[in-house]
Image (tube, rainbow, N blue to C red; front, side, top):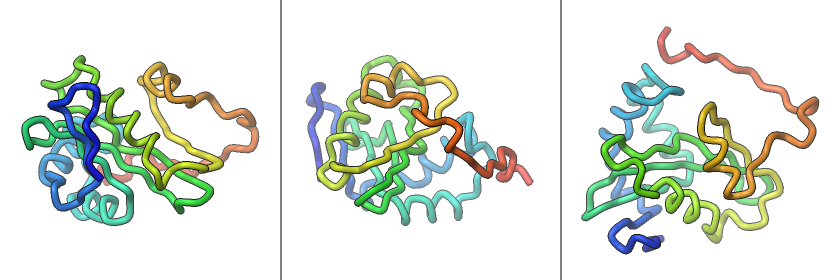
Length: 147
């Protein structure tokens, strides 16, 4: 699937063969706030087991997002980023719009994500704090990639 966004030079694709895995790994392991220290093997396994979206300008990947899903009832949006030199141009909004409009992700009952600083971006797409926070539990190991 390739989708041209509002900015016709920015394209989003789910074609795994186009993903710049070394760039994705470098960003996540060195520059993200959520996966510093993650191994290349873990990044590759996460890509293999997710619906991935690459954002491209002139054939160069500048953005990424992935969705972990059963394609029926549950989806979790993860690892969303735009490389720093391309931020502030609306590419994150365009990327998320394409993710949310993907045909395989329609009719999902629970679509989740975790963010520490981009609440307003995701609120534009219908994300909100849990309606029943007392029903949410997690097992979280924030420093697992550093051990």
